[in-house]
Length: 185
Length: 218
Image 1: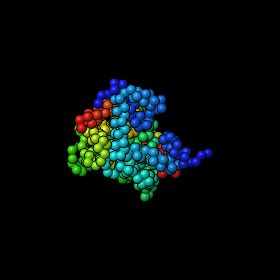
Image 2: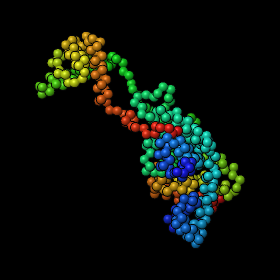
Image 3: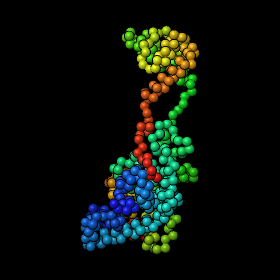
């Protein structure tokens, strides 16, 4: 019988879920540690800049509270992304109502990253950052899930509520736009 | 910047940058890149983009998040257990959790009216069945007062229920309505009505659902 801590760190998500449902608190901690950073990156890719800790925490709370509805037809991480995205959209809706601002339309170019432009000292990194900032929210979301999370298109499609083929197109369009921006810059 | 026409291989570049490609596929892509400057440049760009996206994500306080999750779930745990009707005293429903089914208490006068309707209908059904037609207009009772208009239909044979309720039904028919029932008779009718409620009404799905994550946990 090995060290319980090591067993937890090596267990699959499904095994950790089963352990948590059996009363093992360390399993939940392991799941949080395993996926929190990805959720934080994903939230940032959606344009969130504040309260990401709270957002990630709420995502896990929602997930644990409804684990009995998790059908495992996608990975746990993909499921967490979908929950996180819903929370982000709820938050955006609330902010929009509060500030009565124009909705951030997925079909429009995004300027949310503009404030970051001057913060990047490294010119090469700054150029890439500006290029990514020019993507539409959907393109950036797909691009981020593909590049930073390494998700297959099928899983990305579940997160963004689209089709695998459409996600492939979004990714390649994003890549083309980034290259065009860099070549024009 | 020119693009490689091998889209299948290009599709694998972000996974190579992420490090999630299998060893076999990684070797295949690297072999391709040895002769494809476009893919090599694209991989470099993807690595820069990934680094930027990761750097732009804020640092998270994992300990605080974990503690927050544990606290929220600990507070919400009672609501996740089998809840036939209500939360234990002092237990707050967690945010986002399905609201537990609530039992609504109906004022006694409404129950009395419902009992009247139930009795009238139960008396009318066997009467209709024996004659093959409906000799009595469908009762349109809307309240206790409607009971006083109940026609003098034959007393139905006891169709089940408690003896007290059967006696109450007979008393109800023999008299002018609910107002002439004794308290005991009315209680018996109400008890029967509650029994019928419990057996007939469709339970919400959330009440049937067995919540599995009961012991320990966070």
